[in-house]
Every structure is written in structure tokens, then in C-alpha cells.
Image (cartoon, rainbow, N blue to C red):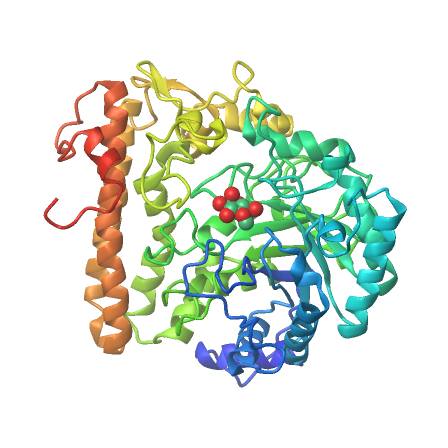
Length: 578
Ligand code: GCV
């Protein structure tokens, strides 16, 4: 009834005929979750929409009316669960006062069909339980988690379960006790099982010195554990093997874990795609991953199908999106970022839906049906992600952004605590060429894919140009499908990305008559920022890579205004006069 009501509203708002309504629609995935990376102090890790929506200090006594508005918005797009706290979790979230706050939120969300989940810190038995260990095979630890689960379900009878980031980026986990990820997940699963709860264990794991290629690590870690998890454990896998880059090939675990239910993890908040200042519609990114053919079980074994037909049956299927919601008045830091929340919900409901259709619905419901408005705005949105790829990381480049903040270009980033947190580790530019060789002659990460998929990635033809430098280290003079050299093509792509943003500004300026002045001005201002920053990315990257290629700009393309050193030292977007 709930989803039917919202669907009816959608039909009305998008101007469809209502006289012969006959729609049947059921979600293809059972768990459609938002993962909030919200901290207990009100900050949000990688959040660009103001502070956390959850006011922990005032909960449970004060219930902000926006909690219900949030749950209603989720329900309107089919989302049925929210992990309230950051995967870099604090044990305090599992103490009695915080569980009561969580229970108060669960009470508000319940009528909207949204269950709450919590990120669990693996070492909580030591930090808040007074135990000397968090070893998952220690009976005291197991008993502690069982009691904790009982306590949670007394307060929140429909509690969803735990999300866990373990032994990754400094988080504690079972490997601290020479146990496996399966040992850790299963221990928590046993505690939740009597209550019907589940464990969502993250595959985003990479150790400092474990492999010659970070892209290989999750597979190396988890593939041998296939079939070793309890029946109420899901493995949550990021869309690509590194970290939510503007473009990544699909994660090799999709199609490689036939005995383990896999859950997709997308990032809705745009950590690597311009925060909330760049207009980048993520629908095409999500769709590209979901439609990727893993070829693991013959043609048509797309990532979407892997998610939909998990080994545990329909009950344990799902998709999670790292939320972009905050306390900003527009919820998501910018109006167009609402479309990313929206598209995520719609694709979690139907992973085979078209991101263009979704954008069209969103534009009509958000702004206007006027002829001459929806089409250009949808077109502009649909190309915006490819434009970001072009002005940030064309041709398969990745992880070349500034250190820590992940905002703006940083291809020169090197040194520091670990090699796989630097840009030079990933682009490997030298006098001969550029790119990470992941073929058999290099790290051989490509072998983690089914042979037919690996063959595609290994190819150098036009079909593999999107991920070219992800898998290959190629000479600057390498001939591309366009007939240009690799160097020239790189430059052309950087310019093409900036030109797209310029075109978006023109399109938007021409649509003033259709949008109220406040929203029109806000979007126009963001596009101005995006244009300046796209040019910053382009100029900094071209100037930097030119120090290796030593090649001239292709004819008709101006040199960057400054030498590479200037961009490296400046480390901020340049003003109009620069
Ligand atoms: C929550 C990336 C981000 C981190 C994030 C991590 C993760 O490394 O930069 O902020 O931590 O992914 O997904 O666990």
C-alpha cells in the first residue's frame, strides 16, 4: 500500500494517464539500504550536505520533524533500511543511551517501512564490555555479542542487523586474533540469528603490504571464503575494486562468489566526483556497473543478475548506497544531488531500470513538464558523469585526486604512510608512458575476472578504451581508435570534459523561464564553480603529465597557463584571473 501510494503520486506528478492504471511492480532486491557515514559528534565522513541529520544530543527526547520527512522520502523511492552510523564506528553507539536514541529513530521510521541497522565496531566487547579481548572464538566475546543482540532487540524488535568494516584502514577485526573474516562475521551472525537479524560484512579490505596491487586484495581475501559464511551473512562489495572512482571496472568479486550472497555498495555522496559542487548525475555510473557482464556464468551474467539471484534466495539480496543526506535545507548539498539519492532508490528497486527514464521522472517531478525543459535537462544530466570522467580521470586513469580531501587534482601525490594512498602508485607515468599494467605481464589483476571478461579488459580496441589505463601501461605514442596518439587523446578528453560543463552552463542559462529564480540561481552558481574546477583539473593534469610525455599540445589546444609546479604548490581552485 505504501509503495503503491507513492507510485500513484509518481504517475500523477509525471503527468501520465490515470484512466487505465494497471501497474504491477515488485522490488528485485530485498534490502535497499542507505549507509550513513554519520559520526556521533554530528559530523559526516565524506558528507557534503551539512552536519548529520541525526541530533544524537537531543535524541531520544526531541524528535525533529525531519526524521519523518527523511523516512517518507526514502519510502517514496523504495528504500527500506538505514544504517545510522559510520562504518568507521565508535563502540558507544552500542551502549544503552545510544541504543535508546536509535530506538527512537526506529519508531519514527517504522511506519515508512524503513528499518534501522547499526555499524558495529568489532572491538566493542573490550571498549564498552570490559573484556580483555574481542577474539571471535573466545566464549566470553561470543556471549557478550549475544547479550548485546538481545538488548538491542528488546528495544528495537525489527532491528535489521550490523554492518561491519573490519581490518580495513585501521579498523579492528578478526585478523587481529589470527582469525578469518568468516570467523568474525559468523560470530556476529550467530548472535543475531535468533532475532532474524543479518550481518553485512564489507569486502572493502586492503592491507598495507599484502599485495603488489591494491585492486587485487578484496578478491584474494574473500574468494577463498566463499561458502564459509553463515546463512544470515551478506558480503557488501563496492562497485569497483579500488574506491568509488569516477570510473572503475566492475568489482571482480561479482560473479566469483557463487555461494555467498553479495550486496552492492555504491557511493551516492560524491567523494570523488566533485562533492556537492559539481553537477554529476550518477545514474549512468550505477547503470554501467549493473549492466556490466561478468560473463562468469555465460553471457548475460550481469552484475544486476548476480545481485538478483543470490545463492540464499530472494531474502538475502540487496543494494546499499553511501548516503548524501545531511542537515542542509535541500537535504543533499545541492538540488541536483537529490537526483542521485532518487536514482539510487529506483535502481535498488529495479537494477535493470534505465537511468535516463529515472532522470526524466525526477526532472518532471522536481521542476517542470514544460515542453522544451525536461529533454535538455535530462540530456545534460546523462552526459554529466562522462564529462567528470573526462575532466578528472579519462581513459581509465584513477585515484589521481588530492590527498585526504579527495577534492581537486593531485596526480603528483607521492610519499606518505602508504604507497596505495598516492597517485603515482596508480598512474605510473614515466618517460615511456602511463597507466597501471594489470595484465599478465604486470600485476595480473585481470585474471580475477572470468576469462571472457578478462579478454575484454585486456584488449586494446575501442571497446576497452574506457578502462584502458586501468589495465595497461602504454607508450605516449600508442595509437588510439581515433587515430590520435595516447597523449593527444588524453588532452582532447580533458578539454572535452571542460567543454561539456561550459555547455551545461549555456543550457541552464537558457532555461531560466522554467525554474523559480532561487533554484535557477543556485544551480547556475554551482555550474560556475564546476566550470572553474573542471578547468583546474584539466590544466593541472595536462601540465603534470606533460612533464613525462614531453610532447607538444595537439594542434589547436592551448598550453596550460602555468607549469606543473604551480598547480602542485597552489592546491586550491584557481580564481578567474589565474
Ligand atoms: C568510511 C574511502 C573513504 C573513507 C571511507 C572508506 C570506506 O577510503 O575515503 O572515508 O571510510 O572509503 O569505504 O570504508
